[in-house]
Amino acid sequence: MSSSPDSPQDGNYALLTVNNPGNNWNPQGTYQIVNANAGGAYSLSAWFLTDTGSSSPIGPVDIQLQFLDGALANLATVETGWIYPTAINTWTQATISGTAPVGTAFASVYLMFMDNGQVTPENMYFDNASLTAVPEPSTLALMGMGLAGTFYFIRRRKS
Image (cartoon, rainbow, N blue to C red):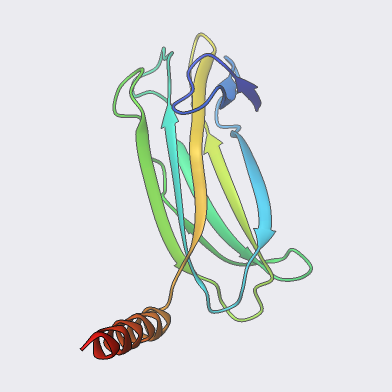
């Protein structure tokens, strides 16, 4: 996996992985491990594109969100399963969500590309991947009540 100025969706670079002939079902990809909180809800979104393709359909992509304990042991995995680009030179988005189980210390984001039987090198670009913590409904309710209370007192003072 390397950065490439060839086909960025946004900015100057995209992550590029190349699957060469004979590699077959050996996945190419990248991952990043970040801090996470047990019980927290997380959403992972990533875009992918291919500008090459000799096999049909063009090699699949799998996007995974793993929840790990303090020793980096896998506690749970949420994934898209194998999904395919919509067309050559067209960005496709994939999004998954999951809740971190008890004991979670880290989340691992994994972007993977794999193909079988290609006769020429195939490129897969990843860009604009983001992992976000999804606020709990109770947090949103408390924030809404705080805003409503503020506006109530401002309005009451003006009258």
